[in-house]
Image (cartoon, rainbow, N blue to C red; front, side):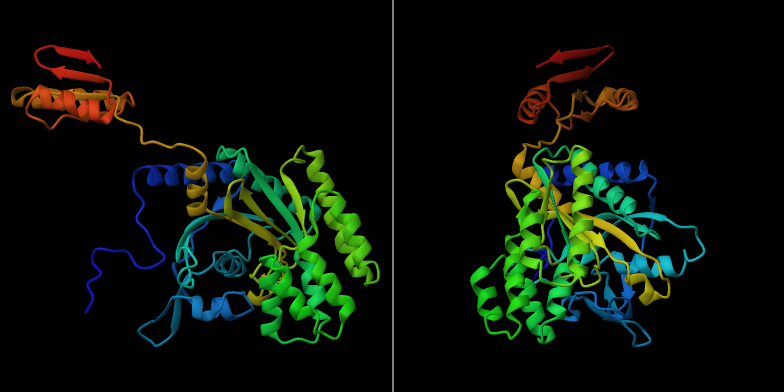
Length: 399
């Protein structure tokens, strides 16, 4: 029998020092950003019935969910996604509330990722859901909030990639392929694996559609993407033109808001989450490959829970944000400003002095060493520049 009491389970980790401090700072800033924009916090259970995530196609394979059985034999899961429980909540507890609902959450999600992928099985998510409105104004609000989030995290070199899942749904629906092949095509587009994608598409009957799908990963960039897309999609139904027109109008509005250097068009965004119906977007930090923010419009999801409301939202992967910031900036734990030393006769007075400094919001440590020599060495090692020696009078040493 292997003993595992000294390690964490695969896909989990301990957060220490700089990481823990930065994680908490990010969480607090995100909460402030959302609250000051009129969003209200909700919390859903960590345990949900499996039915919540299988009522509709969530894009989350059941085999990737942590599953449990309750005392009545009902199958439950650790929450693998926050949007679907909030859809359940909105359609039940909040069904009589006036729309739009502006909700935000901060909670972990759990997913069994394949080994060696380097992805966490436990991930802290903070995000928003804007429920009950389906128009351009709501899309703009959420996209601008996404950019505001990254700015508030002091991330300068970020970008938002904007696409529309409707292109992919339209194209694959016109191919005679099974679900597994559709998922393979989706993965190859997401990974921009052109050779493997072409190998599959070259063997399909509908080459007109296949040729357009081949172009999706290449339709990436600025305003010129729209003209390229119109050229390769000109023989398709007007439905495609309408999606392009809408996305271009949305993109132009973002440019007018001064986000030209932060927004990129990417028609190759094909999220694995199947409930998206309209625009989709992802946020990245330069030099860090994993997305730290993702979201989109999902106008049909709440119907599955009995409430016909459109919605759009996004989630921030807090753990990825921590890694991204640590990879681009130097974050150190702030040392105590003052180290307080006393002998046994003045312990009470020293602790009272520390309490007064704490009221002034001055970070202070009490020296637990018996000698001043050891206290001085500790202060030098920890980068503490002031020592208060508590006796009949309090003496201060500046290091």
